[in-house]
Amino acid sequence: MMQIPPLYPFSYAPIIERALAEDFGEAGDITTDAIVAPEARARAAIVARSGGRVAGLEVALAAFAALDPAVTVEHGHRDGEDVQAGATLAVVSGAARVLLSGERTALNLLGRMSGIATTTRDLVTAVGDHKARIVCTRKTAPGLRLLDKYAVRAGGGVNHRFGLGDGVLIKDNHRVMAGGVAPAIERVRQRLGHMVKVEVEVDTLAELEEALGLDVDAVLLDNMTPATLTEAVALVAGRVVTEASGGITPQTVAEVAATGVDLISLGWLTHSVTNWDVGLDFEPQ
Image (tube, rainbow, N blue to C red):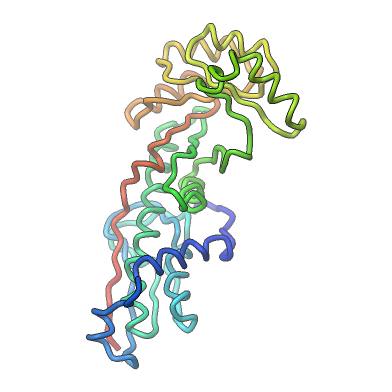
């Protein structure tokens, strides 16, 4: 099983609160409230409809607990585990109204996070023994970045910046506004301390050579072919971290990794998520 540090519940509690508030609206769950008696009890299994890598199970379970702390849980699996179709991830027991009303919020979060983790796992597998690590970006669903990036780690990937304050990434438009790479880096170094890493995006080998002559820690090799990436890695010769990005697919990721880059970043990991099919099967009590 993939071992990953768990998320602190207080960090994702506001996400669950907002999601439940969005679903309940002003009137609450009028369907469940009309059909199910307040005293009715139920037991429900969270079941994988397809195989994949689990991520976000505790987050999903917290959606039920947010509605009623008395809900009990029997774990079958944990985040970071690979499961087959039909696997029971957990069983929740409690007030039937709570389980029915919290179902969609819980499954939405679990399905999204496990979908990201499963795709990440498959990319990590495709890279094989190459040193390149699979990295996510800031192209996350608004308000869900914490969960999206956690899911990438559950899949065996690593995280890029969490936000704009984590590190410097000088992109093409920054270069335009600064009048070039050199003045952009100079302004950054004047303003920020020694603990802040600086990465520069480059589109050509000429731009890469310029960046290597400046005070940078990493270079983002944007939309380069595998052949050009190979030349870029040779030019860098281990002096800075190399990151390949742009236009990389599951079909090409192994070829990109073979060029010797350190990181492969993919925005579609989190902005074009393939939801993992998971359901909640009820057993009335």
